[in-house]
Amino acid sequence: MKTFGLLVLALVAYYHAAEAVECNQWTKFYSRDFPSGNGDYELLSDIIDENPQDDICDTPSGIEARTIDGVDYKDAGQIVTISPETGFYCVNSQQNGARCLNYEVRFCCLKPTPTCTGTWSQFYNRDAPSGSGDWETLKDLRNVHSNLCANPSAIDARVVQTNLDYRTANENVGLSPAYGLWCQNKHQTDNYCQNYKVRFCCP
Image (spheres, rainbow, N blue to C red):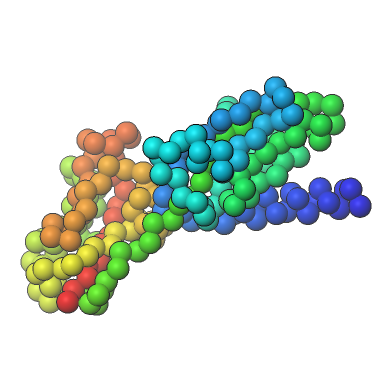
């Protein structure tokens, strides 16, 4: 029965980690505890209380955990409990004589797709980041697509390769309904933007 319980625990942990992959807004990683006492407790409630300036969501949709050395918790070979609702903890007494490693966690706080009170246009991708960056501007798009509205009320942007929200790329990107999207290669840590596509909310 003990072996079965551990198996179920491992499956639950893996399920939550798989859910967290498609996330458009991750928090930074937090490591608030150290396993010198009963274990390592990276609980959501404690992290929220200790970091009020970070505006962490109360009901995250996903969680990722790793050791502070960057090893995914599933590869660390320890018995742990993990869920977006609670957070993460590792109990020293459950590690067969060993001590828990030091872990850090981050949470997925989904950002909703912008509200459109009219009609969304199709997605447009007129530029590629091979020059100075990726420029999906309303003006340039209207020069090619004359039926695109001149005064959109909202804009939605996604990464072409993944079709996920532009924020999943963690790049320095500008976005506005009046101008469109712009990403400059020189402002990125790797000096190269992702390829983006945009759509506009037209009245």
